[in-house]
Every structure is written in structure tokens, then in C-alpha cells.
Image (cartoon, rainbow, N blue to C red; front, side):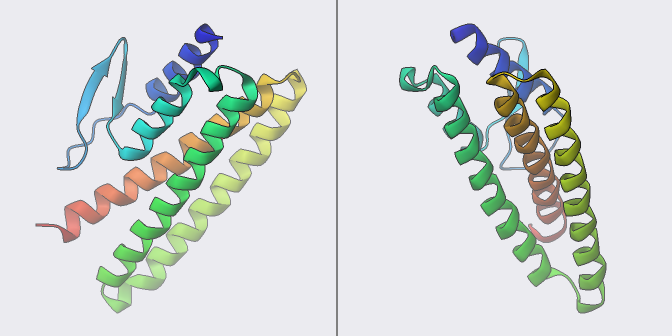
Length: 152
């Protein structure tokens, strides 16, 4: 079970390692993987390392909880940007977010079909990890946008 946990964390963190240069994001190395130290990441890691969650149900609960937190952060960041943007740019930004949501839904539809082909209990985990990666990346992208444009 620890090996499965290591594979999940490795896949999650490795696929989300990108170069970001803003104040509240600090990149550091954990084994062979790079990831960013966001509160949501630390909470997920802590949840997955809890021995009570060394099973598929526990891992899925941790990942699902993390997805909800990233959606909350995404909504909050979107709102901060909307408040800060000039009125003439707001419709364009709203469309961009709407287009991203459509993209995410399309990716999730494909992901659901793809992982269901294999079956097994891990397919649900793989689907959740995919959603987590999509939402986390969008949230970080918006956070970087906000930090670079509206923070001194």
C-alpha cells in the first residue's frame, strides 16, 4: 500500500512540476519529484501519509477533499482577479474561465471513459488524480496571473 501511495504522490507531483516564480510559491525537492508548497498540497500529502488512509477508500477521500479545496481556491482567485480587472476586460476573462471549464469537463469525460476500460478500484483514484491535476494547474495559473498583475 505504501508503494501505491508513493506512485500516486510521484505521479501527482511530477506531472505538476513547472517553473513558477512568485512570492508565495516555493519550489523544493522531495526525492526525485518537484512540487510547490501550497497549503492544499501539504494537507493532501499529510492526509495520504496517514496510515488510516493506506487504502483506496482513504486515498480517494483525501484526493476528493483536496479537489474541493482547490476549487474553493480557484473560485476565490477568480473573484480577486475579476474585482481587480478593468470593466472592459472582465467579459474576456469570464469567457476564458468558461472555456477552461469546458476543456476540463471534456478532459474528465475522456478520463472517465479511459480509466473505466481498465476497471478495478484504482480507476476511481486515477480519475480523481486527473481532476486534481487539472484544477490545481488552473488555480496556480490564475494565482500567478493575479500575483504578477495586481500584487506589489
